[in-house]
Length: 457
Image (cartoon, rainbow, N blue to C red; front, side, top):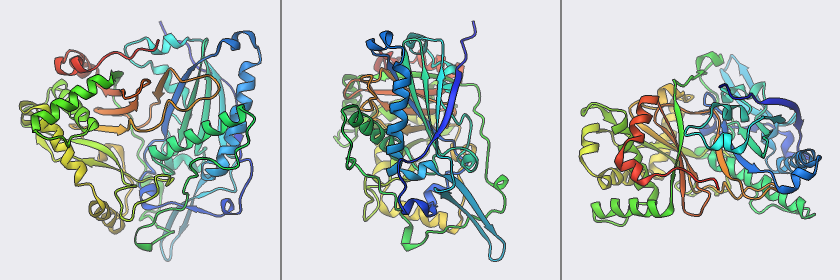
């Protein structure tokens, strides 16, 4: 039976509550930002249970929407580039292809109200994430360059029979996952203050909007193109199953202990050990030939690794998908969990200021825009996002969210997105695989002994 479709009820644009003089100037993008122009938007969201009073209050949702819009306008004062639009300035002699954010000639961030005749159980109980979840987000299949003609940020509030999903899609050229959750956290902070009739004179973590430009260069970086067709790729994922696997804090502790014990060390982190388990399990599930080379990529935050370090509140892109040394699939599976985890540990340790600056130097010599089909090896896995982000701390008058879900964006074979679990110390992994490989993973003894089905009670 086909599932119901999301019904779009209304949309509007939200401007920052007030505009500073700084927000009227062009907002220039740094190299790490420009490289993201062909990637998808970031699409993440939280599913909340409607509070009991919603049943007796016919105005519950309208009141919630009004509060969300008002607090969003206040949050955009601090994150004003998200209310702008991309602009390209082109000149021939000398060559100039400049993409930047115009914050003063834009309708603002988009706000969508939608509904779906399904329950929380309909969304969370199936083994795989239902396809309808992709409709909880704006910017479906959009690439960041589309921010020339569409919003750089959209909030979509989808009302379910017994719940509310708040989905946020943000242009990845303006910020990475750290920046994304920083904005989400600030919006929630302002919302909660307003709920308590408190007008915040300042937020707890003001974003650092000033772009970091290497070697004192910038703020203008010209791309070596004359037309967006030269660097924009419309990536379409193949048929994928998408499933959430839960790892309790106890299970993660066992995986970490095993990896460190096998290597006779204590240096391997929980996430390195968990990533090694995924690397081995997905390699086995995909049935690679023993001599097939494979690697594992981890999304590394560069802020603290650059010397001098960037502020943890730096708003922009400061990540790199660090790649382990390629190994033969047979070698990866013949050796233990600790062997694979140590390979990842070495990769992370070597990702330092020198490595980052070499990467920047290479980009400056040959500026390029990343494309999904060329950036990620189909025989490897990519561990995206991260469990350290404060995801479940975002509350909007409905208590703690029951689950987190994502949209279509940036998914491909072997993509694993990590989220903090609902209970402290746990991790949820969103795994994307072709149907046959997912069935093999579900039968993998090593993996399924460590993983469990998420509980949403």
